[in-house]
Amino acid sequence: MTVYSGPVFEMAVNQFNVIANHLEIPMDERDRILMPKRAVTVSCPIHRDDGTVAVFEGYRVQHHLTMGPTKGGTRFAPTVDIGEVGALAIWMSWKCALAGLPYGGAKGGVNVDLSKLSKRELESLSRRYMQEMIPFVGPHTDVMAPDMGTNEQVMAWFMDTYSMYQGQTVTEIVTGKPVANGGTLGRREATGRGVAHLSKRVMKELNITPNQATAVVQGFGNVGSYAALELHHYGLKITGISDHTGALYDANGLDIPALMRHTSAHGSIAGFSNQLAFDPADVLTLPCTVLVPAALERVIDAKVAENLKCRILAEGANGPTTPDADLVLDKRRDEVFVIPDILCNSGGVVVSYFEWVQDLQQLFWEEEEVMRREYKLLDRAFDQMLLRASTDKISHRTAAMAIGVEKVRAAKNTRGLFP
Ligand code: NAD
Image (cartoon, rainbow, N blue to C red; front, side, top):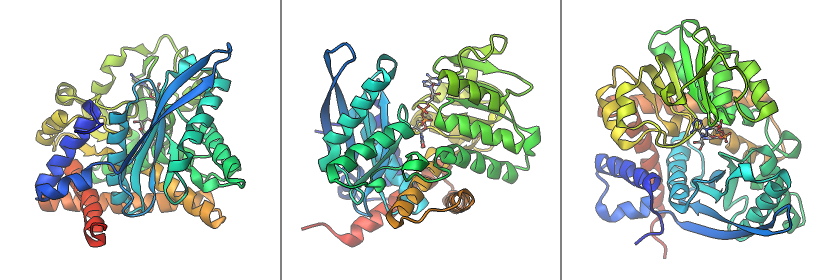
């Protein structure tokens, strides 16, 4: 029996089983590595603007605390449930281990439709969620960060709420804060920049010149917009973009800086251009050099995988590709170069780690320093993944996850089982 259920959790379990079989991990060791250490569910009551009270369910799952505190984002979305959060926490563990960070994975979230909340209601919900979590989190226990539906402002409210209860400012309780509140330069851009940097590295491996290449990006939030902007700076034409309101296509390349100005003023790509409107259902299968899914899980299933027309699949989102699709992509290894999510979007947690380190030391770095260190860690993990994939003749995802799982397993085995 387990509290975790649903298709996203099943996907994390299936992926783990592939790795555990590959690594020949004995059956009686598997649950200790896979199953999350803690799951917290809280009710968050808030006053609505009309004077009524509404209650929202919130979650936090901490996967393992073997290598240090847990680390992971907080998602505010109507799809959030304990199974989804559990899967995302597990993926965070493999991601942190692959990048060499001293963290276990965590994830949290609130089941809420943000379009139905005013800014004041969002602040109340953010503060109440953090207040409910205070007994379970801490700078050396579990450090939160943004994810879908949360941003720097929400992190500032989290930090303020935690600090008011401690009687002192504790910036290191969250990452992804505004720079004015102890955030780091380069965190806002970190995930998207990392996606673009790794895509450029693969283009180099494949002898593709960036200014003859194109990119398509699904999702134009934090990850998608900065990935698109950085790829645009590298010289690629960004021909397709979609978000929850629709899609845009321009064979000559969309004006990404203008689109970013539009979305920061209006909250979505809607209204940017009627002429360039396109069917969002077709975005993932557009011909392009680099495809960046940067929105939801499980958007690339076996059927979509058969029809992908990209040369590089750069997974900005967490879990965009289903295990069935992986089987298809395994057969298409020479046609589609996959940069798996736990590597591709790890620039976010890498720079979150830098933010935590800077907060603990109260010593802050220049943006160039942040970027240099981010790319160094990403390149190291990329090299390890490529070597492992070619040595073991396995897919990039299996290689990346095997490295992560192996590190967690080794740390657990050498610490031993308490008591
Ligand atoms: P966000 O809330 O800033 O943006 C999400 C984007 O997805 C929005 O543009 C939204 O319109 C779009 N979207 C939602 N439903 C869609 C649909 N049906 N079709 C197309 N687009 C849709 O979130 P984010 O922080 O950019 O996160 C996106 C993904 O990246 C998530 O999977 C998240 O877990 C992952 N991720 C985020 C970070 C980070 O640092 N923010 C780090 C690693 C991974």
